[in-house]
Length: 70
Image (cartoon, rainbow, N blue to C red; front, side, top):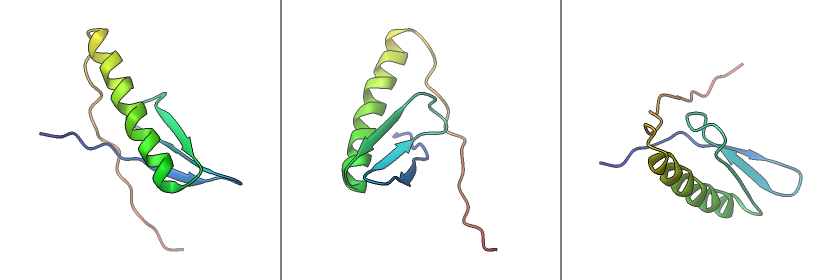
């Protein structure tokens, strides 16, 4: 079973940045949104590998997102 984490992607002045609310410290950037998400996927794999190597529990996904109108 694959675990799914919420990724928050933000547009910056010249690139994109992204982070995972349920995985503190796991962030990435990229020139395009696709590049940013690819970098985030790689960062997450390395981060989770380190968590396992350190004998810690994997973070549980619990963040949610909703679009709201005002």
